[in-house]
Image (tube, rainbow, N blue to C red; front, side, top):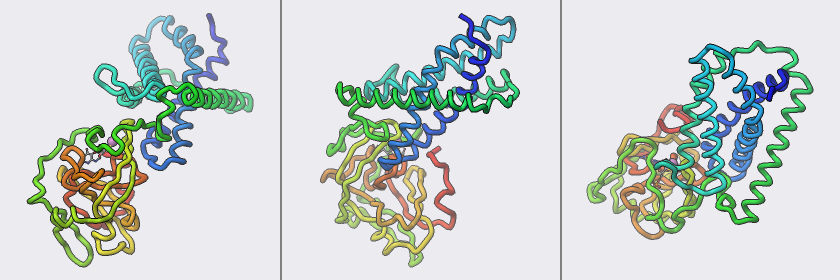
Length: 342
Ligand SMILES: Nc1nc2c(c(=O)[nH]1)N[C@H]1C(S)=C(S)[C@@H](COP(=O)(O)O)O[C@H]1N2
Ligand SMILES: [Mo]
């Protein structure tokens, strides 16, 4: 089958917009911890993804035309690699969303989804360079805008149908949270996955010799484990890992404003782990952050941050610094950090 030229160009233009949108909304979803914004961002991500799926039959024809043209072997390889990675990412994303958090070849569907998307980026760039097109006035025509809107409308309807169906039919996807995560280990901390962002290893810390260094304008103080463990501040909060799982626990420990002797008038607090991992928070958030020693009435275990870890309700799991060694102010702004841990 042949694809009419103009339809081909429209398909390519739509993909040129949709692939970066899908990529960006995916990262945005990782940054969103509270439920209503997450619902919107995840829906946008899903709609972009389903619109790409809808274009696959068209793109297949364009790809076929390109591959049967003679010459240009490296360019063809980049293009095919891009196609394979995008299809892999789409498939893994859909599997995660509707069939539950399963492993494939030793990786979670979410890891494959994200990994394939990140790996596709250089091929996307190479493909754009190799198949460079000049912009034409007709690209931004009313007609093209209408067609893209129709495509997005149909994708939104498809997404709504899939969501409705997964709830009605009891598919695993119906149980996932607005962020896309599945419940694992609520009120049973031992059943929570032990998650490290990349390379941190669980340190072996003896509570007897353990203290958290708390620095305030008034001075520096080492707060030992007995004092931390006696903290009576309880909070019910949900840890939600970008890896695709969440768990609600009743955490107990000391609220950060109490630890700091009040809410700092301004500035930033840096919470640092024994491993060197750290996150920065606006100091005004101190009353909404906890240094927890207990979950579900039991001391934390080593993998989950013992002796003390941060509890940051409404923020994704990577903010919940484990094995905290210090809490201190910083002169640099809160946004002065990589949006995701590196
Ligand atoms: N020091 C340190 N803290 C960390 C991490 C880490 O790798 N190192 N991983 C973070 C991530 S990505 C998540 S989801 C949670 C996981 O907590 P858990 O292992 O108790 O489930 O801890 C966070 N705190
Ligand atoms: Mo995580």
